[in-house]
Amino acid sequence: MAFNHDDPLFKGNTKLKQAMSLAYNHEEANRLFYNGTAVQAQGIIPPGIGGYNKDYKNPYKKFDIEAAKKKLAEAGYPGGKGLPTIKYDTISTTVARQMSEFFSKNMKGEDA
Image (cartoon, rainbow, N blue to C red; front, side, top):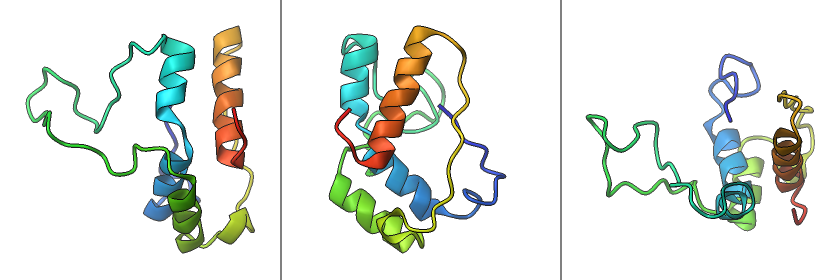
């Protein structure tokens, strides 16, 4: 999953991106869509590539709704107020639809 970081909503708004990462249940997504076999990426450099740091743990890669709400407020959208709709484009397969629905529910703070 990727976002257009040139979009004015995301450009320079690190706290919004952190909030979204904290609101997404990466472990549950791994369980649902990859049978728990996926290696959770902690950064942009994958294992086996120069610069990979096996000891690095991304502090925003954990599922923490309260921290996500705090970051969302710090980003200028307390309680999600004023946050515009974010368009999620995907391909038309069943799994892609399920993944987009899971993402949407996570972003709404709903149980997925």
